Length: 500
Image 1 (tube, rainbow, N blue to C red):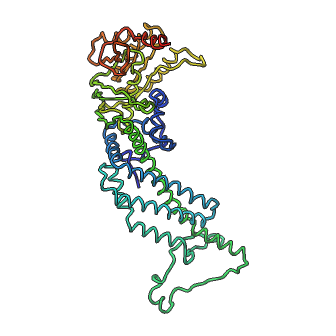
Image 2: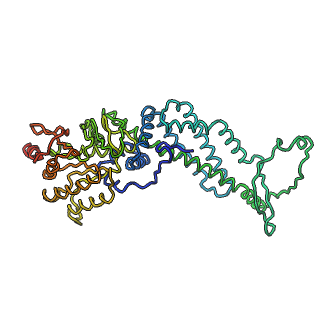
Image 3: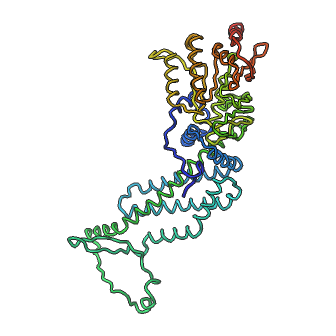
């Protein structure tokens, strides 16, 4: 049995490695806040959220497949949560049953444990079947429809009756029936366990007259401990293969519940985040992924979901009409929302390409082959290298990983040196990325850098500027506008020192 709620044709691999840039993305985009909101303190859900968000899909059809399942989840959150809770109860219940046979070592003890576990798992499977029968018809996504169809067809009444009958036989109410052959040295060999004979298999002559094959028997005295031990060993040889086969069956069913838990866990995390955003009145949308290389980038009301989760009020959203613009340069007043906007774009790409909703009123973008961040970092406290050396080292790591159609986000990069040197370093790097068709979003206070790109009057560049009102107040909105030679640092000076 397969869940296949994360991929159309394969399981969700929770053990897969994260991409090399995962740590930088988590730090620069403040993803810990997002993962906490999705998990609500559940460590397993946090691991699932981290794995899914950071492992971006690049196939549009695969993203749409998840989006359909997400829509079903948003329309039927109670059913999805019920299914997830059932998987958690199953895994925890299995552990309790296993622990009750902690000292089971003999084949018969292993068999008894496996019977009890399988009886418990069968009950959980029956509950799954009931949910599929009673609630499955209202789901419309291919993923959920296939899952519920499988639960209805494979877990029908005939299946549960067959399991019940087999488990009843494996308790050996009529004793253990097995055969063996004499091996080398007249030792027993080729032990085979047989189905217990009953009156239906003896034939009518046997039932009426007791006619059948001759039987030979012997009895072991009550005090013959060695004899009883030898008999127990014989029984153990007979049930050994059956015990192993039954244990494998329980492992197979348990692995299905474990996989279902992981795949449902992603959508439960989405539900948790969506409910939090909805309570705050923040908009969300199902994004429109476009073909890689199409150059599409358009959004309305885009905001930083992680910032919105940390502050009491609502976050300010921004619009962006960046279709065909492979370079977006963002300048303007200090503390005007530039870095926040940059994080919102990076977060939107990650959320879209893992099949989630996006923190915006509308969002559409060309799929990218990875998101990379190069943000300004604090000074190295260990003084192992200069700040510029540290920035260049991280840029070298990105250069070794980045591919065409990727997205690279620069936040005040190369400002650790003088403006002329920093501008020239950044210009050459950005131009090299553009030459291989990498989309670049750049927040900078280097006027020489921003003005240099603006003076080229290229149609692939878009220039945004943080809005500043006449009295110095920031609206945290970004408007199209050419870069200015000032970041209005005097506004901060007056606010800090003149207020004292």
